[in-house]
Amino acid sequence: MITAENLTKRQGPHTVLDALDLSVAPGELVALVGPSDAGKTTALDLIEGLQVPNAGRITVAGFDLAREPTQARAHLACVPARLALPEKASGLSHLRDACARLGRRIPAPVLVAALLRGGPPAESHPRRLRRRGLAILLATRDLAFARRLATRIVLLEGGAVIETFDPNAPRHAAEARANLADLIA
Image (cartoon, rainbow, N blue to C red; front, top):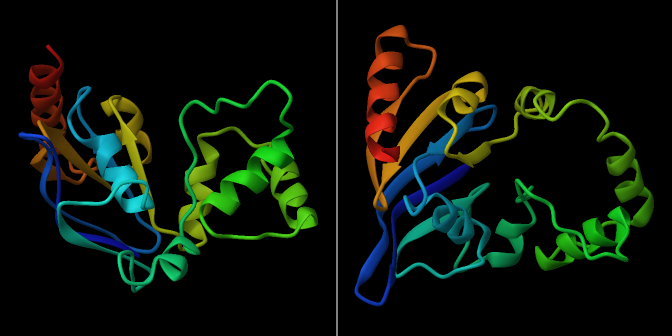
């Protein structure tokens, strides 16, 4: 489970993320959707511990990220949308380095097995992870993509939540598309 309470990040006088309240339960896939500079990446960076919030609290699997960073990070994994590998880096060395940045030392055979299992199409991965009971947080500008995968969508604009909805509820579909169209235009 991932929980963010009153999560706020400011850069100078600009509020990048404004009092975000968010929870992602085991088996749930929550998509943060919005235009560029909506606060999606900042929210992910804060939850991963890559940035420090100005206010708020983050817990991962019951561990407070600020007070118990090692335990909290042991329950986190991040997969960037665009994976930029150094030219001479192997997939194994990159995966090992990414785990080390999160405070995890995983034996090479386990990492190799994870790389070998990575063959199915990308869109099947979140479904399999959800079945295993993992809490998944996704950030995207693509509402159609989010609707296909998410159990809940959080629309962000200017660092604030403007709407949260169930993408499978028909009455919200047209309204959500209209809101996103207004944000991107």
